[in-house]
Amino acid sequence: MDGCAWLNWLMVTARHSQDQCHRVEGKGLDMNHKRTPFSAFVEDSKFKLSRSQPHPEVPMVVSARAFGQCLLALLWLALPAFAQQVSLAPAKTASIVEEALNRGIEMERESAWIDAIQHYEASLRQNPGEAQLRRRLQIARLHHDVVRRTSDSAIEQIINTTSPTTVLDLYSEILARLEMSYVDNIQLTEIVRGGTAYLEVALMEPEFIKAHVNPARKENIERFRTGIHRVTLAKSINSRMEARTIVSQAADIAQSELGIKPTTTIMQFVLGAVGLLDPYSAFLSPAELSEVESQIEGNFVGLGVALEPHVVPLRILNVIQGGPAREAGLLPEDRIVEIGSVVCSDIGADKAADLLRGPEGSQVRLLIERASGEQFTKVVSRRRVEVPSVEDAHIIESDNKVAYLKISSFQKTTADELDRALWTLHQQGMQSLIIDVRGNPGGWLDASVAVADRFLTEGGIVSTRGKNGIENQNYVAHRSGTWQVPLVLLIDEQSASASEILAGAIRDNNRGKLVGTTTYGKGSVQGLFHTKGLNCGIRLTVSKFYSPSGRAISEQGVQPTTPVLKLEQPHFVAKQSYESPNAKTDRALRVAIEEARSSTVAGLAASRAR
Image (cartoon, rainbow, N blue to C red; front, top):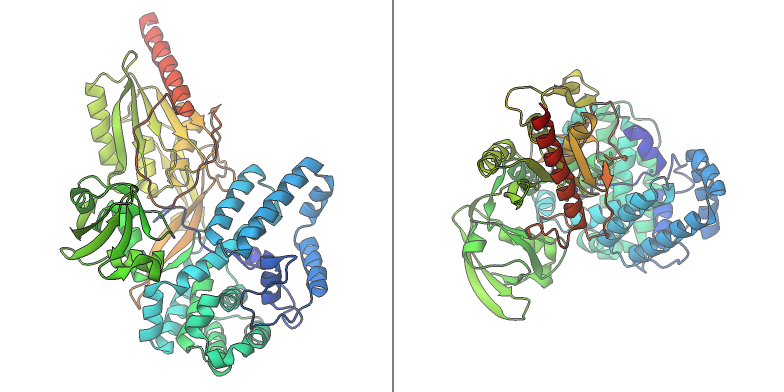
């Protein structure tokens, strides 16, 4: 399904940060806008049987009955196969899906978008064909993105300091980039439709309304949401100039009816143009662009901590070895209560995290709270921190010299780090190797290819296919520098993107065993593009990748050769505190050690036979 058809199906999806990849790897339907506005679909779907309002002062104008008839028609038109599958599905499966939907909708009623996203993702792993779950996931992603952007100080700065003409220039530049580089052909009508959807959802969120709508004009919100379609979706859009003109008109109307600054409205169309293409494409503010580039390089300027997202006080998940936070005595599970004179809970997690950023050499005062309740103050200097991607390389089973190492991400330094680790393990007598990529969200495509090439003498590693010929690449192994050591790869449902390139290459070339659970299923490559204006960027899906056998990875993942189920674990975007592997408590690791031990014994027997 291409990006435009995807928008037509639900018209609501947005980025949820699974991985930060550069060259990285890493929608009601076409509704009659004059009869049923998109806002009615989202609002009813957000609160389903309850007609509660996200903000009581805004009345509903579409009846539940009318919406229900429309929604049934939409589902039938869009998903005839699914409708037939539902009628044939076992009652038990239907009951599980219904329970999952009800639980997720309760989270949506509470505006717990992160919880809802994680819940729907977990439910879809258990029920991958359920379109209703996928639709709810996309709605939750859109709401989360709108809420996140509303509190983003970088977006706020653009809105407050940039002219409407400059932001329109940015919009035109992004449209040109989409036409040139996005993996699927785009239709400008659908891109504008996506921006309209983004604006509508923003006008459902109390924080956006509080920040941008004139209080005296709140009663006009529903009328505006209903009428704006007659401007943005009145006709087919055939050129970037037409799209720009329509967005400018929408901004003028929003200013006239709601008192919203034109730059604010135009930015919603900018965000929707990219964020609604697929879950991995996104507009990047200057701070986000810098963060993505730092992750690719494997270093950044900061304190050297990883934080649990969207939680205040800020909870530290990991303190990077050799970083200023580690030297200041900060520990995993510490909470940052105050930054300078600002109480984190007063401004929210995202803005609090922004305050930790600053120029190299500057200092920040932190009020820290230990898990015990003890509080103390630390002054920490910001400096460049090197983030390792290959960790804990050691002999994990001494009798058979089974070695272990973990790759936590794929960045520009990963191949060199791996080389150093392999030579150290070789000097320690390594006879077989376990590589752990569980929880690895991906990273730089070239790094995953380089890692796979270390263990393959020949054959394909991965192929990419995009709209432009430059994105059509076939990556193959080279004999020189290959390690012949027996190999076991530990994978799980959070092994994504670049991790799946490595897993697919090892599996399809029969180079080793894969132990664990099926991987995430992110089979697309993102390119990172700087915009000419405003020092921003976009992360854009430019191609899809396929394993050496030609199998698509998207939504399928890579299956283990030795499945080992595990209990569901909470998913964090930030890297968690790393604990050394323990086979006593880690069943998958125990199985991997057995597989490696067997490979070592078999290899020794074959050597003796020769």
